[in-house]
Length: 116
Image 1: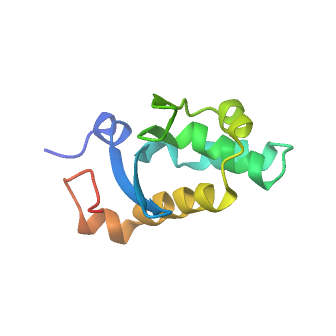
Image 2: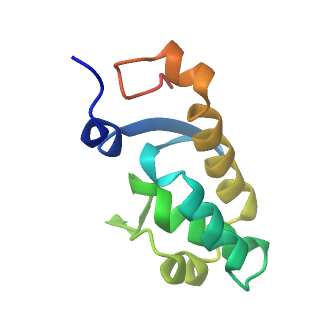
Image 3: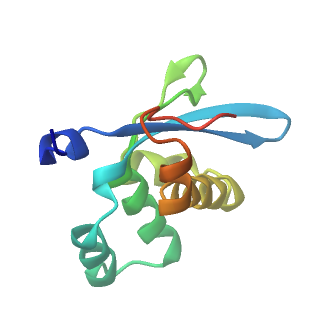
């Protein structure tokens, strides 16, 4: 049987980012990285950091980043208020985008995740 669009729309992949000697596990929605998101980012009248936070809000599903032991919501407003280092945000963006490339998807076909 062929590939059903519903299967593609439900693909969540996990990546691990190493930052400051610690590991951060991030789950993202593969289907969210699409032309609609590109249009949102192009039309957004925000600085580069604002666009990155909007990207995170649309693409990331969950992570194990906490503040005082409590999970942190992945919304642009919450993330902007936290003033996370741009280097961490860029590492998350780069790692997810790298994982979502056709070569990586083919290499890990069927697993829905990438080794740390």
